[in-house]
Length: 200
Image (tube, rainbow, N blue to C red; front, top):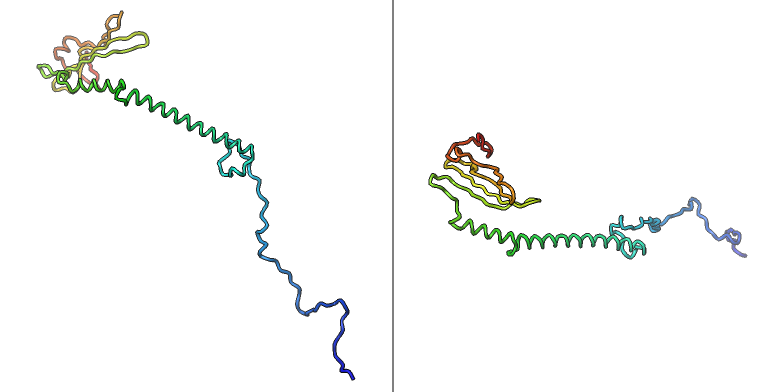
């Protein structure tokens, strides 16, 4: 006699085991977040006017490479022009002003020799009055002339006053800009305000 097994047979093909009380769950993997890259933004086309050098050379198209080359060439040209102009200014400053052989240096040396020579020192007369005399050349758009002046600073005064100041131009009469009267030359005191002599 066979023992009776309490087994329930199931239909063929239904091999899945069901557990009551358990619901099916779905899961999402965290590894997928951000893995899919966002669509790449299309960059602005490079031109000679908007290129700031941020885009690498290898990423530029042929036209953009030409634009960058044009921009860099223009900038380099401006720098070269600036260097040439600076060099020209420095050259002329050196040859005309700072060089030991320049006219300005020769003139300054001549003036220094005059100042150091006692024979050309300030002229003081017997009364103690200081005299200042100048002789120089003036050039105009039409003709040249020679200017001469004689100024006197009396003892105890702070300002010079003119004895004479005139300009000689070839073919013309002498032009006096200042000419002291005999009374002024004799020692008449004049009113002076802001370097201007009043009461002539």
